[in-house]
Image 1 (tube, rainbow, N blue to C red):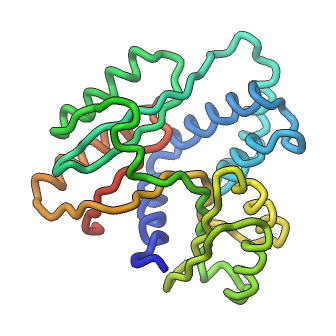
Image 2: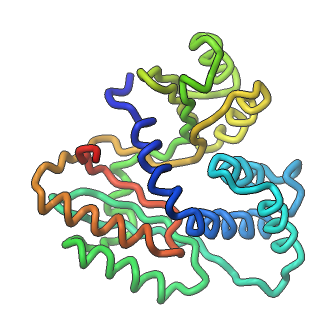
Length: 245
């Protein structure tokens, strides 16, 4: 069903992320703190915490670091109060961006996000200005080389668990779910020891905008790079189609 490989994109992201492990661990550490605060420190009774732990393991966060984060969040009544704030805006050629942040200082985050958009020739818009161009979905990507299971068997496990769609790529499989069904489907795959290259609730663009002009590409990358450098920024979603490096 899908036309291009998302796994190549993920591998590219992972390569970039390997150079920014500290930033990734900071992001996940905050997500652990929020999950524990909202649902408690026991993963068995907290599906959000289970999802964050799965994300941590996918990013090679050591188990003792994960456990320390949970204990710290459980025992830290005076810790920072993080707030989820989402920004929406436009990049070069009318591209749409959604920026999800987790912050203990709204003014600092708003200023940094606005600065990133401005330096890349874009602008922050109002809430809802671009989110209608995206679908929120649970997305699980499986590397074909890492998975010994036949595609039909894998598809049946996913669909039986409640997945909406199963797509075969040359190098990977993609499973899509409704956000509410994501945890159940992910855990069904985990129970079968199926390795997941990526598993998260994400925003998938309904259509993409192709950027071919060198200056547009430079400006879009500037926005994304500045946002990536900000510890308050958890995720950046966009609908720009850019040539792979």
